[in-house]
Length: 153
Image (tube, rainbow, N blue to C red; front, side, top):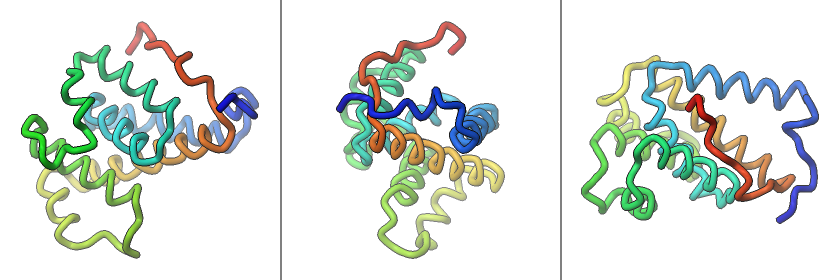
């Protein structure tokens, strides 16, 4: 899909607030590579081509293997994700695909075993942010493939 509206270039206060949320999460105590992994997973679920392109490039620049990216959709069966990554991916999927009105206690407990309360809030905000970016890109289109990794990342 071609870009219909460049929501990011408009300087819209709402979009700027989303950027601020993303910046805050990226400056949290959560590992940036773990954040990129959940951004990639949420983007797979939502079918956001721009974000899949962006976060796969960011992950590869951070040393992520192609194998882990290729099978991320089947992370439960694949042996090469850590328990902490699995907990983050479980949280990401639970909050991205809202099947129930609330997070089941067993999922909350599993994630809580790997993250502090502050990290759980930051992880939740990261999932909220990527889902928002996915929806903006899906609604308005994006220049898929145009993203390049910044030198500072």
